[in-house]
Image (spheres, rainbow, N blue to C red):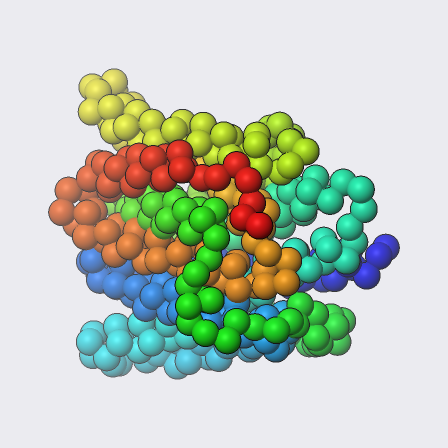
Length: 409
């Protein structure tokens, strides 16, 4: 095994562990506070600082990873998540509602920083590790590594959703957070002992102009990513779990379904290289694929709305579950192609900065989708959330029409 392949395997394993606990955290917070009687809008508010913090963390994290090394930023991300868990575990049921909400929002903000520092460092490490392990099929290796990393990460996130529901039901809120913090501590120790401390270190940009002045491909892909992930989270963050719980599903059932869906989504992501025809230049077939799958994806929420409006006698929660299956497959392939394209457009020397900029846009999309998920669900239910998703996906498709078929020199 080459050093590059070894480093890729270590980073992937570390991010699996991080994502498992991060998915569990989402279910713990969402289901715990919905059970306590919080409204859909307040539930979405609990996650807003988590997403907003991710915007800044991604952006500055890419610069920091370039200047101080990817390994250091990965350890900072893991450490910050542990701190967030411990702060959140101190929440007392005797506190007033306003203080409880403020405490959770602040702790979630810390976890949001942790998540996106870890994500930026991990995905930047793929570009560095691929360069170290490069053979004749460089671009093919990159697409396969990105697809496997992204897909397996989301499968672990799915297990995390299920884990969160089970932990809440078995251990309760506070003890679950302590258990997850201890597990992350072991992962952190493994990263410190096994990865080169200076991996990915390069000369960072010296001005804000360089940080914002990305290539056309990176800028357009970032804009598409905002719409893509806003379209997912506008119904997935609050709408789907609350809708299912309101239709008689238990904590474990909701967490289990979210787990199965996310695992399925991750498996499809990992198989994307088998679905997308490869091109020698790494862009001439992949960019049209991004356009095609964006168009397909935009149709799915509209189809679900139409099915919910029919007097078919099928339970609405069953219709939603079936529609989520279609959405998950199309979204997974589309997201995997996007994740490849950002590394294909990114420069090798400052890949972490380009990736950080791109995932800052990703976090901005999640922020908007999370806010709208609570607002739209409270305003008009799941159908209104789906309408917002369809509009965002149309914007994503239109943006991909302008993606270049060549890298900037």
